[in-house]
Image (cartoon, rainbow, N blue to C red; front, side):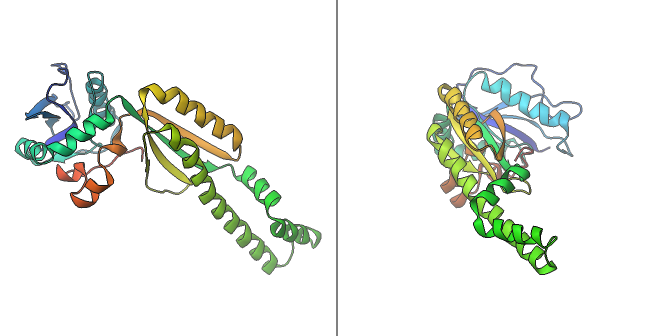
Length: 262
């Protein structure tokens, strides 16, 4: 049976509850595999695992329980390994990296921010900033809507201006919040979001960081921001160099990682 991996901790980490259950139906008992200075929080993996609410919550519950006793390197939902021996082998082979990450992520949390445009507000902003678009729109209105070619041209000009504004706003968001964070990680782009950024924030700086988010929101009313956090620092388990040269941590465990909130 394969081994499901929830996270990595120091071997000296405060003990977990003996009755802690993990993913699966029925839930699999959680256990700890130790190797040198490190340990992995694991359970037996179900034969078939889908991102159902029950299992997503179980994965998060295990990490929350572990996080209450000290720093944890969280694995993304779905991380699995062929067996226990593979898990302890990875812990031994990558011990230096994991110990460095545990130290770097101690007393931190991840805040994920997704941003998109309020369509009406950004159109008003573009009209105010672009005289050529404003002029063509006025010409079209005076001509009863304009020719098909003029309509197409106006639409293309507006689309280009919106795209340029998306890139500008994403950069402004990162510049405004990065000084309050210890690190920034750009998440995968998806339809509907002009920015998907994760910030590693020290626990003592969380209030200042959230205040900066509110200030940015007030200064840019054409933007809609969705803040998710505090979260375990999923996006910061691996450094860029470790991802490129050795593969990510989840890949090292042989995982099929799929973080649902990305």
